[in-house]
Image (cartoon, rainbow, N blue to C red; front, side, top):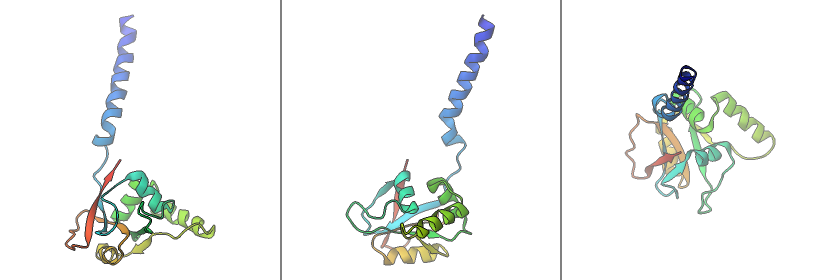
Length: 151
């Protein structure tokens, strides 16, 4: 009887260890950081709130100001990672999502910017804006802030 229980306990222990460590051990670090205009009424944001913003399901900050979301162009690694990690879609799936939403008259997609420098300029110029840039870029403008993304 002891021989039959041993494989079961090993299996349970292995599954438990995998579940416990999978999110940390097997996930790669993000290649992007989320930024906002210094006047935007946000200091931290959950992944689900960010997903709602980028899917067009949330368009106003809690203060009542319209959110001006921006994203990088499809050919950037930061954009691919952001869409995969935050939105749960590939760039082509995301574009298709917005085509459907636009066709049904349910919102406007985030502004698409070519690179991190243009993203930072856009965020600086729009008080209620939010976007993301590659983690390798430095923010030197006093009009920008980094937003902590929580689970």
